[in-house]
Length: 576
Image (cartoon, rainbow, N blue to C red; front, side, top):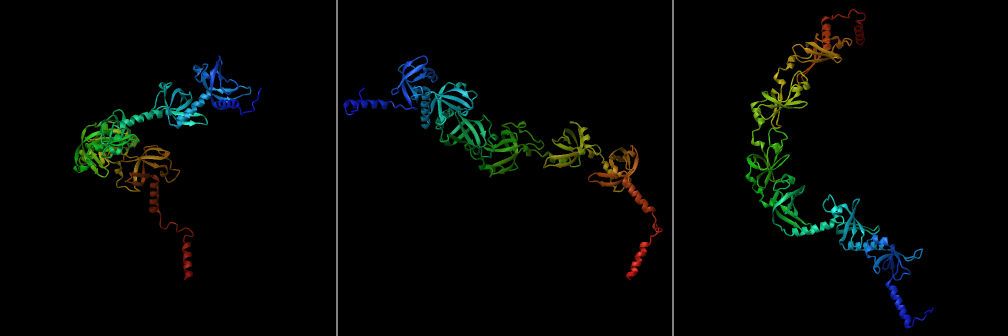
């Protein structure tokens, strides 16, 4: 072999030039993607020619199928591969077409992410938390969270699987090689472009006809215009009167005219007003006077009252408490309908708060005043039991639409309240006595026992220590149940009050029916309370006997009875 040492000859210089140019075309380095030409295809392998390598690298045919390039496997075709090793332990070149495709796809994703451009992809399958998206150009797999599939809730996404569509890259993890994409951003951006074109059609001052109420919020009401865009009417632009919430004025589906008052092209929002379509009614509120009746129109009904109009634009609330004098917790929906014209009296006009209060019940005479004039306290009136609870009856009084309150304690003087309450049923006719009328609180208290003679009058003129005769009704371990002669009330003489001697204080001594005397130990007409005691009677009798039959000289004849007197005299003499 001839060794060229002289590089100055033209032939040597030309050879050097050709060698350097060939090596510069193929920079063979591990970890880089290079192009290889298919030279041979077998059932299992694809052989490549890559200039600069000492042997032909081989690719498994299944690898080409996995990356979808089986159709491109023909002799003479060019394939991009990743040079993993120039020479392994067996002296072979190791390359990978699959890894080359993944790296190329990642480079394209990085470029699209940096340039803020969308990519083409298709949803291939569902997974936990979202779906898998395949990049059309490179076959790279990406993740799309469920929240990024659409801008609206979707019951099913089956119609999106396998369909080529645009996606936006929202996150890239270069360390892990993961990409996260969003279909929602693409959908929203298209809608944003369409929305901008729609908003350009409007200008401030335009009147929108027949906008439909779509929904409420705490700050306003949303209307749909021409089935293509939603606009907002702020709470302060709904009415000249004070409005707490839009549902006080509007119902879903209603149609209203709107006036455009603002357009924000950055936020793509249109602000509208309803109240500016009409003059401010509070400018001539002086035409109305407090205490005078007016016709109002019911425009909306709620659970707590009706919203009415004194005139278009001037709305006011008729609270449920101002509908009727007598009916409590009344349902306005049962009495009125939207559009009804009703009589009301203005009770308040607040110009600062722009509020007008009205009352429907003031158009009628207060039935509690009429009742008081016709049946003052102490009068008797016929009634019918309308309802009952565990402690009282409610009685409809005469021809009045008023229920009187009849407490169980006012049913009978003698019976137990709970037992007396059970004797009366709904619909029963009763004559009752008016005990109390509270017009401001709209309450009337009546009584039944007051129609009878009060058995407690038996004790009028009696006082503590007076003696009365009683009849034993029954006895138990607590004492004696007795009934004074000439009285319908029963009283308990406690065991400790039966006798002075503890041995005699036995309730079992009495079997019932005995007539005995007892003394009044306590009496209170305000509390309607009386305590009786046989023991007190014995003490009073013993005291009377001692006072009547004892002698002033008693004890004087006993020895040493005068000893103390003599001692006192002796002390006085010494001191003198």
